[in-house]
Image 1 (cartoon, rainbow, N blue to C red):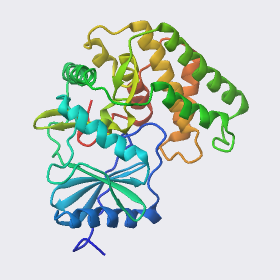
Image 2: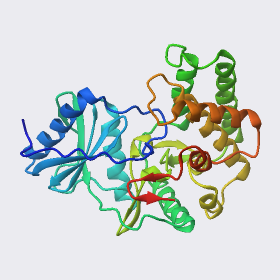
Image 3: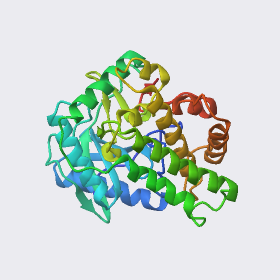
Length: 320
């Protein structure tokens, strides 16, 4: 088996914020195989990987491989990994503040034992706090660079459709009450229609630029997890960040932002009812968000809801 020496599995404690959406962790039974796949790929590329530290486990593993000091992302084989690599290359070329692919190897998807493995630069976390002004500035820089990138991408409505599938299928959401199912389905449909009818300019977005998808590095904040990139109004991205960040982001439409906040809350609520969801306090989170959606305005930010239920957003050395 590739990888020489013991594997030290140091699972970071905290809520799983790298993806607050529909991701479920890689099963324990697949964990050893996934780690072996990553270390095998690294070894074949002359990157010594004696140890693998689990940094995050959602729908894919994030591993720090040492002593080569490379970040490996491992997921079941599928098109998402190649799409993320394509986005990363194009966004880096446009000068966007995003995590870089590993420069010592070819920038592509490597396959082993049914897994897709991608290799990235590892960044040692630094100052664990980014100001709201700094967050807004780096998000604006990301959006500006994304406007220069012409690459095929899904639309935000595709993300909504994924949430609608969970709600519409009782087999996928067996604990969701019938009345809540109807309410949430109508909410998702009506909010998407309002956003589309608004007719705002759409562009490439990160899709989930919440604090769990931001790394603080010596070169400043960098966005990661680009598999969620989609096209839509910038307010859809802003709906994932704190109110203080939005206040410093220029030229956003407050009415559209409120609608996008509702939509994001409805999507998150849907994913919390997925029978495979393993988000900490997931059912409580889903119930609370349904209550908030029924209560009406003012609409809380996703950040505020998460703080209320789970404490501060903490992930990868980032604290907002």
